[in-house]
Image (cartoon, rainbow, N blue to C red; front, side, top):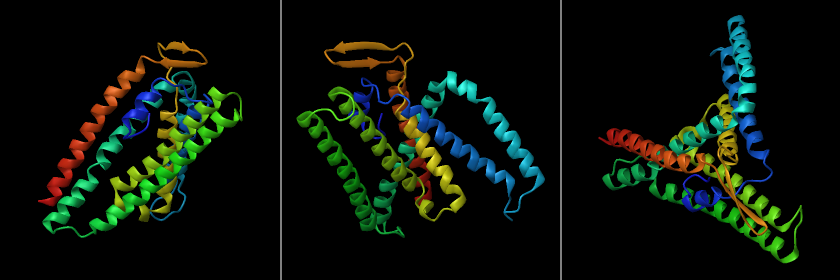
Amino acid sequence: MIPANVPLLQLSLLLDYVPTWLGPLLLAAGLILVVVTFGSFSIAGESRSVTLTGVMLLCAFVGGGLMLVPFYMRRTYIFAAGLLLAGRWIEGVAATRLVSKIIRFVSGTGSGSLSATIRRRFRRAAIIVGVLLIAGWAAVWVLVLGPVVVSQTYDLTLIWTLLVGLLSVFGLGFKFSSVDSRIYSVEPRFIPMVIGLILSVTGAQLYNFELFEQVLSAGAVELSISALDPILLLAGNGIYVLGYYWSARRRLQELK
């Protein structure tokens, strides 16, 4: 379930990630980071001084979050599905940035450099290619020299899981910076929230949906698909298109 990568997404529908606790752990860690960061905003205002009202709001916020823990443990797939769709919206919004850069360059109204944008995209592509090469060499190592952790099948699945997670982290980081180019100069207090969102969406992508799951065995390999997988795939594509349309419309209005 990789953003903006349909072939990987389709393959991820059939393979369960390992270890199974990795997705829920990243999802929970990201949500906690977002909640704590957001709650800290209520403690201090613009003056950065702690107020009694802020402390009371934070206590209420944390208390409400703790009450949701049992629901999260029983219905993790709801949080995972929601964050997956949120990630697709971010992709759709971010996809229009290069288009607006090209339009500004052609029309002569751009304040930034198109060549700088292209160079930045080449650097990002180099990072992604580097991750793919490392994963490829790791897979070759397991196939030629044998398993390292458990078994050959498990090790290859583990490499696939780590590849998906790393591509998701880098991809979401790139997407957030594309949604708003000011992300690099954002206030330090907002950085943990951005990191939390990246972790939570990545955890959602590594979550193994088991609702009405069907397992197919082919030798040592087991392929599984949940009833939610095709639904989330279709819904995610729809959310992506809506995000793209909304962002493109906003950007075209700004160019007028």
